[in-house]
Length: 168
Image 1: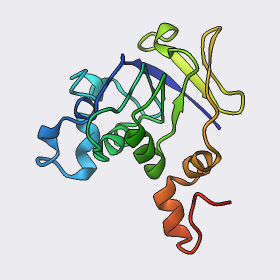
Image 2: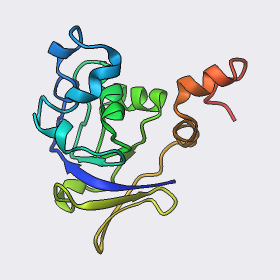
Image 3: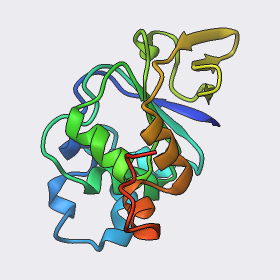
Image 4: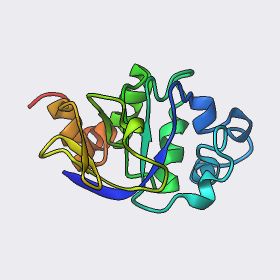
């Protein structure tokens, strides 16, 4: 699996209220969440992001509440993948459930990627590339890879309700 796009760089501890501010959760339909993605940390993000772009972040991305809408907002905004030093566990699981690739880096990728850089996330080689530099990536669980290929665990379960998606 491989994704390429412009990198949007964020620091440590980006919480779900920054990913999709709570004030929008009751004002807009689920189909409109992408228009407000990341506005809690960068109000101009929805105008800057393009289909296929990648978020690059530091530690603990997606901390805070268990807000599943945070993943939905990123997907609707066009984000194809998130690479971070680490993720909040609940955000990580919500992303797998909904089919948003979330890949942990072996070292802080924000030390290598600058906002707007063209990045490639290569899971076959387990590397994030930006120019001539590379950041090693941790191997995702096999069930996560299958989920990302098929649109998420929820989609896998919908397609085959008699077989739990986490089993081979």
